[in-house]
Length: 112
Length: 117
Image 1 (cartoon, rainbow over the protein chains, first blue to last red):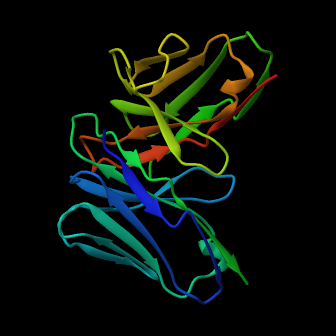
Image 2 (tube, rainbow over the protein chains, first blue to last red):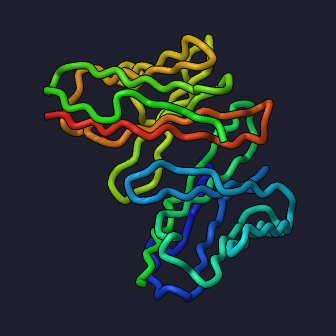
């Protein structure tokens, strides 16, 4: 079945440093979504990427979708303590139910 | 975004009892809901896809007789953990999808922490 690998599993940074998490799918994706889960909370949708090579920005967050639509990345510039949480990528490879396959997530901690 | 509620938020039960968890989409009609299980500091493990008016589709390795799912309406799906055992203790999260009316975003409920003694 489809697998979505995500690295690193953990990342600890000093406030102000940059952060990147990478996602790789075993199969070509129809689209990829990114979610953020704060400690003790539930996942919250951040963005969806659909097109090959797509790049989207949300303030300090930059999301990329690979040309082959099998990999993606999330880059945060100048991290802040509010960025703390686990970032999950989730791939959709087609199908009427819109089932997502989640990566294992990257837990980001930020030292103030 | 859309709001999904989940009840109860926390439940403690004795081994052998059954527990029902409700998932409601409050402001949109969800044709499809999903049930996940999440262990501490781990990813979301999809248990089943719940389709309104039809049987749920279970992922490989998930016992459908143990985790009963009912999607009675476009706003309500329930998960019943039958004859719960301590190994069933976990964080259960539901989500509702806006597909096909939307882009397929999943709106997650706040989760239910189940502890089986």
